[in-house]
Length: 226
Image (cartoon, rainbow, N blue to C red):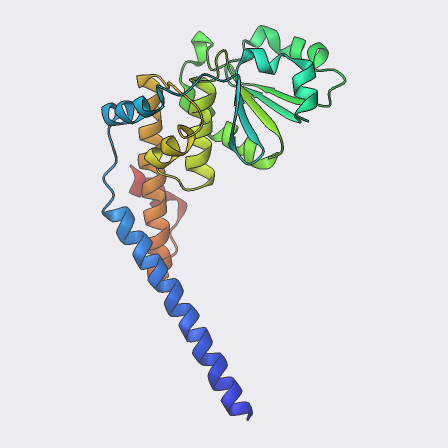
């Protein structure tokens, strides 16, 4: 009796191990055959949402919204939506103290401003990881806003989907443009393609290590990405 139970358990464990190995092999094969789209192809993809009606705010992910300046400064609407966090993707540094200390007082809103439009901070890619971590750590009802909610905030949200949900840049764009018209600049798209290449390479290395049981040192990972 006990031998039968043990044999069944061993068989189930073997099946699970084989199933997991098959999944890793399949995903690795998909990544190795993946051909990323270039910037011009991504621009063509973005044209699909050109006919979408412009909205002040759009629900783009569970409990995550992309909005423009009008919605982010409407205290009554923010209160009605029960917004708890605002990540301003185009925040001038001089306005930071105003929003933190005055404007959102009494609304129990956590405000984060990223100066992506500042001439000394023009490389938006340096904010990809901080923005993704902010959203992932405090995922509640959150508005991500910039002047119009179509460029800076959209780009940072696309990066979030890629970093935290393992989406390819094409998948992230397809997801967002189903509900919101966005227009990342060509430079922003270039930064996203670079992020995409780095993330895909990291995922391949991780899957290869899982498949072979290899454990790489940090310097080996850096060398592999170089």
